[in-house]
Image 1 (spheres, one colour):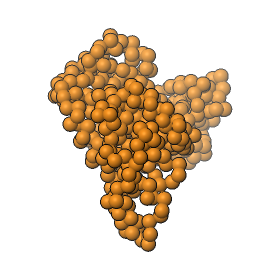
Image 2: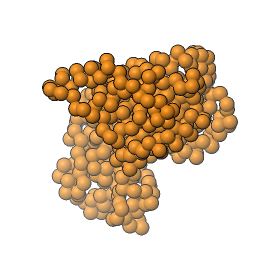
Image 3: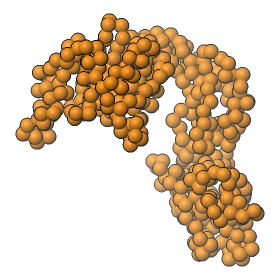
Image 4: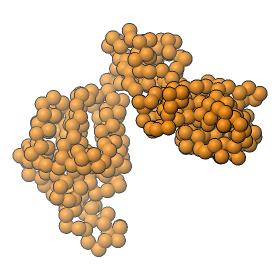
Length: 412
């Protein structure tokens, strides 16, 4: 089975809404072992919906649409699909009564007249019920060959309808065609450098291996297709094990795991506590670690000491150090790490001080220069990293927290 996703809504084309529905559906289709080669976004216009529908039917036998099922005049999905196949929608009196009841439960004396259109569908189509709203979808097998499934654009509603109705139905249709993936996650290495280490695996047919990158991370996705989930997992795990043997130095987690989650687990399991002193990152590292539930078990005291005065008064960084070496220096990073550890009374003290830009850089200390200090026990270490002056302020700050987390992961 080959699927195509059509996202309907002018607001998507204008960039007013992020299309999370397409991402969700693409992931779900992959897990079902359903191929999906095309995604299309189209505005609320019948002619253009007809055009993309015609293209989709030419190359796919499962068409999934999201959006355009509301009660207003620009919600045209069901009307456009019906007119494309020259079918007149019919009213479902039972569904109409259910919609009226929903409004009554909300305290409305009468259902708005415009909602009546949501009770219409092609006669042969089946409803995909919506527990959270009035926009039911349809499942319609046209020409006894191709299946069209429609969902509302509201993510909460679409996900419920997919999980409760569509996914179980499609599972039966594609039984024996299982797709399984593992995503290996890396940091501290670029995409091309990582790809070079495992380039021979990119020629595999089953499983397939593909790299993709985001800021501060590289991912390697290993995907296999088999008749059973057990066999698919065996194929994936065998190749993943071989890849990890060549790349273990930079690997930190898998699938949806975040680097800060890994660090948090390590801190908790080893009963370590930490104090963090940040300058150029402005509290971003603290945020990433405190985003994790249970962070009070390891976070005791964090400080954003942006100015020299704050570094001196809060962290006890000597004025002489700041005057002689500057705020962005090995000496200051070291003193900040010791200071925060002593104040917080923790096992570990971690500091970040640097130049995030876009200005304030010099030849000796360019934009993107960051020093990290780590005080653990009687040992104090400092790392110097250049993230590049052609990188944005936002990226430098994020990359600095990524480096700090990964260094912390390795140290604990």
